[in-house]
Amino acid sequence: MSGRTLLIMGGWLSVLAAALHIAVIIGGPNWYRFFGAGEAMAHMAERGDLYPVLITLAIAAILAIWGAYAFSGAGLIPRLPLLRTGLITISAIYLLRGAVFVPIIAMSGQPVSAFAYWSSAIVLVYGLAYALGTWLSWSSLRPLGGTALS
Image 1 (cartoon, helix red, strand yellow):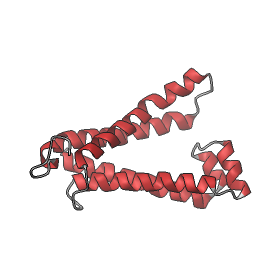
Image 2: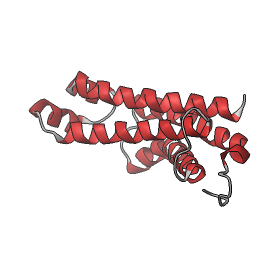
Image 3: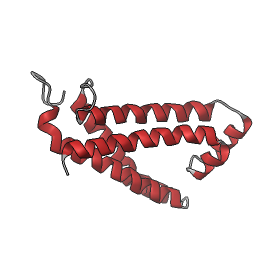
Image 4: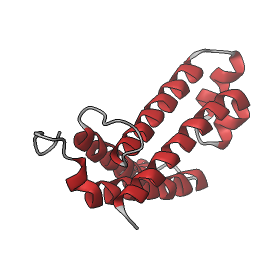
């Protein structure tokens, strides 16, 4: 699989995750519960508080931007600023989230939910798509006259 293909896949995964976050807002409190946001967020959503909506919108926006970075790295949209740095950072965040979420919960003494396991596995796939796509596309990600990480 080429780096471009992996970045396109990673971009669509991020866009899908962004859309899912919007769906959670529309779905309401039960969707917050089902997707692991916790009882506090679900209760705030039940009361009509804006906090869950704003947090979820912010996450959706970040995920959409991450999708744009993958698409930029794949050459589907114009080059975004600090493309290499952005793709490395996005890869690291996805990989760290996938690798450490379950152990952190387990070390806290709380029970580890099925959501924690499957969401971590999914996010690891996202991180691998970004990391491998970035690595395989590295030379084509360098801007003309750019520096090593730009």
